Amino acid sequence: MPDSSNATSPWIPAGAASFIERHAARFDGMTLDALDAEAHRLIAAHEQLVDHDCINLYAGTNIPNPRGSALLASTIGSRPNLGHPGAKYNKGMQHAEQLEVMLSTLLKRLFKACFVEHRVGSGSLANLYAYMATCRPGDAIMAFPDAAAGHPTHHAIGAAGLYGLKVHDVPFDIARMDVDVDALRDAARRIRPKLIIVAGSMCLFPYNLAAVRAVADEVGAYVLYDSAHMGGLIAGGEFQQPLIEGVDLMTGSTYKSFGGPPSGMILTNAPELAERLDRIAFPGLTANFDLGRTAAMIIAVLDLLEFGPAYAQACIANAQALAAGLDAAGVAVFKPGQRDQFTMSQHVALNAIPYGGGNAASARIEPANILFTSIGLPLPEVPGDANGIRIGTQEITRWGFAPTDMVKIAELIARVLVGNEAAELIARVLVGNEAPENVKGDAIALRRLFQNLHYIRRV
Ligand SMILES: *Cc1c(COP(=O)(O)O)cnc(C)c1O
Image (tube, rainbow, N blue to C red):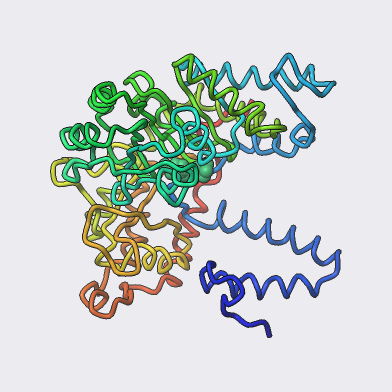
């Protein structure tokens, strides 16, 4: 038997090390035909579980338009594709290169922006491109801290630190879950950041971008809004409009609320940033890129151009109804002290402290076929775990769940989480009222009621 410790790769979590060793040994013993069959079996089982059998409340995901997903399989994505459209190095591109122009045109229309860079593989890389366009290694930047759901790519462990930036916290007003503008002004005068990053992996409320813009102007900083989670709602016009409110750059992921393939994007109205970003993308960091993704992105943008406002409104209405339903069912929904709403976005936050931590609670509810994850909240720490839970309604909204269905989801969650919280606190072990395995059948039955995707073009 392989050793199940992580002795050979001590930087990997122990659970991951033993998992990798066990399955690596299994695959080593299989024939080519068996491996081929097993790869297909694993994909089908994953799709069945995550797409069809779970109530997927994970905030950082979505169900894409199958017509877009089909384009990802086109050979167009496997072909070389070097240079600007209209001036390709490789030949035979006269049809394919028009797709790039189409996507740029549509993204600019969707976000009312002058320039877009879409040849970037992910939201993380989009942030790196933005840093390279605005900062030099050694510069100071400011970003949301973990307790405000700042993203690792904004911090020392991620793209910002790897590029050599010194990261300081954006002061945060936890009673409003917004930037503390007075504290930001004081800190920025002292730190002289080159870049101020706004937003992170959970945005319950819009941020005061006009005030951040004013501070940035005073100290000569650029402002970046990371729309990884909010892209779909911004596109739908139902959340704040960062470029109109004055940010220099908006980066984003395309597979969360945006609902497209996994990719990245950067938008700006500033010509000098546009030129730098274009050079960073090509010939800088992108040689060939996946035109299948470009094609799938076109389908996602067409969906948002047609259905964006209705989709965004439905995501928010569902989140508000789910938060109210959870609250009524006795679940500890997080509400900032100076807000009279739980959320103005697709996100809902739960205080995970009564449930032994956000990771413990996410693992506890997974066997009930309900998926969500932990998040950092401005609450007391839970040793060895996160103190919050983050829920997103974007996927269930696309499956057609309506506000009246949210109370049913809230009940399922409450059946697992709400119970003997005092005992949980003492034992640091979750003891909900009901075993998640008992709830699973009801979760699947509820999920089965929603078979058709909404807010997508069928043609
Ligand atoms: C998810 C996320 C990213 C990273 O996006 P990927 O496309 O997964 O690389 C960046 N920033 C924020 C705030 C995110 O939530």
